[in-house]
Image (cartoon, rainbow, N blue to C red; front, top):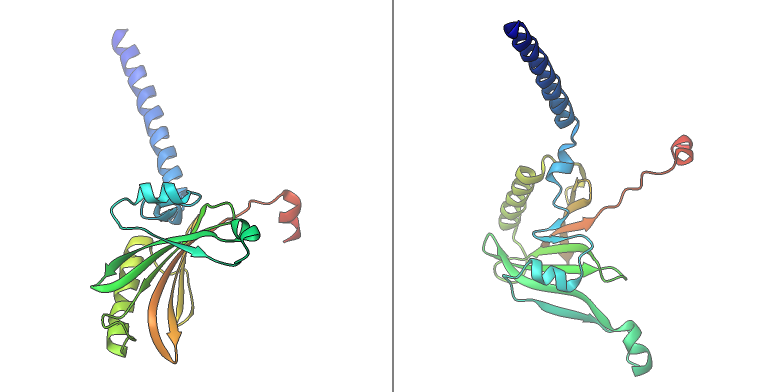
Length: 199
């Protein structure tokens, strides 16, 4: 009798675990790869952080504050002149790189731009440009998967759940002055049933 009870309990446990494992596999299979890979910001800085929180999250760099001066009149300056961005200098493939953090009107992190510049400080020559561009694309694809869209040869994008990563070129007088990698916050609203019926 004890053997029968033990055998029955073992069968029930096996079936329960097997069903549970199948459920886990189904759930993992349903997970969107882009959700798993989404950085939710840049490095340890996450969307919605304040400037001070960003500085604490990335504390191994020398920060510089950039003030946007829209008003010289002292009466209005306090409303319009504020620190809109913070940045630091870095290197990518031995190229000087500026990493710029932009904040919204509520002073929350909304965008990060990496501007990779030529080694000599002027413009990229075609060989250097192709090497750096292709190397950056490879790193981003290894990290975030295949490109989501290619608008043209100058503008490529990865769309993740809360982050859009766009790689583009900054032109000046028909020359490329920088390769920009722009991480921006992406908001998707679920919408109501009425919204869904209209589409």
